[in-house]
Image (cartoon, rainbow, N blue to C red; front, side, top):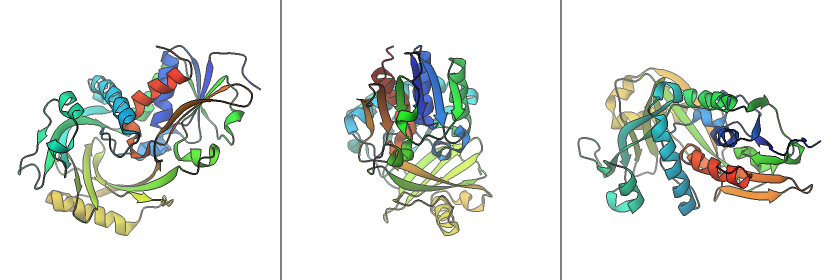
Amino acid sequence: MVSDSGDEVIVVGGGVIGLTTAVVLAERGRRVRLWTRDPVERTTSAVAGALWWPYRIEPVARARAWALRSLDVYEELAGRPGVTGVRMVEGVLGETGLDEVDGWATARLPGLRASTPAEYAGTGLWARLPLIDMSTHLPWLRERLRAAGGTVEDRTVSALPDADAAVVVNCTGLGARALVPDGSVRPVRGQLVVVTNPGIHTWLVSTAASGAMAYFFPQPGGLVLGGTAEEDAWSRTPDPAVADAIVRRCAALRPEIAGARVLEHRVGLRPARDSVRLERLRLPDGRVLVHNYGHGGGGVTVAWGCAEEAAGLAGAGR
């Protein structure tokens, strides 16, 4: 049965995309119910290393606009890092030169420059970017939603039309593969290792000649080491051999990592798609359905820009 309230919205999906979309809708005056299969602390977003950078996300022009809007928000949230989980942290984007980034980056990111040999042995960019501690940020988003009058319900959805509201927003990530259904959504498996931080305060993203990734992000709970990007891999079980290889690659960049104690292993399945699906449709009964999924590993980077566009499509103006 559809709710009698025409201003009610159900957002399906409790990761960073769903939570952020729900927050924007609620703060624009809509009555919002967030349905999530898992507690926010156990969503794919909770596993993310969560460095802001528009990386491997299509369509490029729209993704850049979403990312830049999100950057505006994260810069403001970084004024309260202990509360929001957002900090502005310096580091190096390896294998990237100034001539390889578009003008938007140099115009929008003060201090963006070529890294020095002391900072990185290869070609790299030194940048100050948002780094988000998801263990703090996701619960903060949930409480911000509640403060705006929204509710969070643990609920599994088998079909989008089952959501009993005038407007339904689909932010189910990888779940959209079966729920929509959309067979173009596929997992890209990422494995991480969290170790005690041996005194590293900057982040680094590097790609070896072999194409293997290595990155580390200093987070309050430890140094997050990565990583992998295995397409169409569904296992959520950490692979000890993969974990050992991640530590070796990171220790080759910063030798002190070799002696760090392992605290945790994490695996997440990024909800990849050839391009983000952000559009408004009509359900057979005339209700509004907004899709907002397929962000791959860029969900944190574009979350606020996508949330604001999705809210507009849902009929919630500024």
